Image 1 (tube, rainbow, N blue to C red):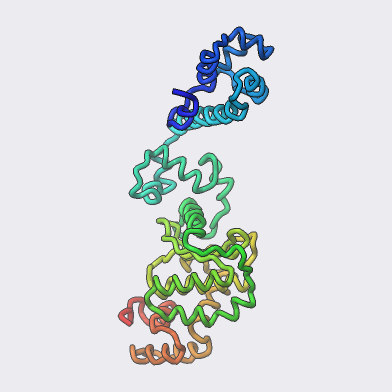
Image 2 (image 1 turned 180 degrees about the horizontal axis):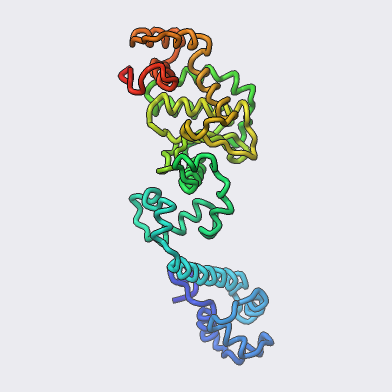
Length: 355
């Protein structure tokens, strides 16, 4: 089998084996090759056995002896071979890891569900997802992530995985907005359009329309299901110099998803910094966080006028007709009114869910 065929196969033999084949074809012995390229027979032997790396200098000399075979051929093959050796050595190292513990800690079963992959392969793919070369580097890169939500049962591994899964979806879910500049003034002009879109209670359709409008404004929007114990609702970050909103769809209700989106809009308008990431968790984890409270206030007032709500919520008894009437006056869905009243404990958590 010639070198080109070997290079295209899953198994690549040492470059020296291919050199041997060509030397035999050209009728050149190792001793003769040593003489022709002014090298020791020992060095030639080590290169042919794969014990020594085939260098650029050696390839250039070989090019002048084995006519018609450029140095680039040998160097490309050598690079492929050395890569294979390195990968094999990596697998040996990975086999020494406690893969079952890593699989549990980094949610292999959840992330790679349905994929026929060995634990070793899953470990490698998780490292790629997290953009680290070794799990020992995780704390250095993600150690300060979401410190304030750990007390509430959240896991930084889960949030780190979710953030990177969202990033992997940006270009899949969105249009190319490379040439679309984000302008805060344009976003402010279009806030009413987002609110209109929220009134379509067919959630998937309304979020798809929301994403299209975001893209026209130079904003990426990704909807990616949350990882267990990430406890995340959404995040605002930057991808390729564009503001980017991630939503987890946590709780899976129309009002929760849209409230999370409006919350991130609040961050975008009030706090956006290309070098920072804002992560929104379950509300209990954000108590006392002024920035989060400002974003929450923006989201609440986005759907319902603050003063009008204060007057309406002053009542002690609410009926479904009251809620529907008020929602109609606010040009919003009754679902948003119910969610707000439940959140403020004006009604029971499960009350009026049917509307």
